[in-house]
Image (tube, rainbow, N blue to C red):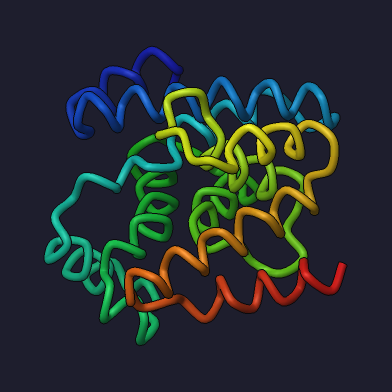
Length: 187
């Protein structure tokens, strides 16, 4: 599917704010890919489609994941919104015609991360956090600088910040996020 067709489809499926965010992630991912030597087109597609399943209701996320035979962790059972990465990868393949396993994996893990991420997975994980339309957090300028100088340091910072936020809010934390943080903390 061509980008213009993807945009038309996403505009129907996402809230206006989520649509703008997706374009911001596409742009940021493309810039980072250029900087780090990743294929810019792959980064653009992964960035644009990363949240394609985000605006599905929580109940529907769980039902659709079951219907499509996607694995559901105990944490995802408790917090089905976490399934939007897996569902997003599924829809990227089935509805948007993406066959590149690297793009699909980057979409799958853009929220939780995973230990030993590929360059594309790192770029989408970081771009989702730092894109220009994100709410300004006190640490965001520093994290944005890290994104342009050392991806692993940046990922560690994002994960530390995310885990602190989730603990503060008393929200279920995906084991994969904690494992990813431990991996990048060790360097």
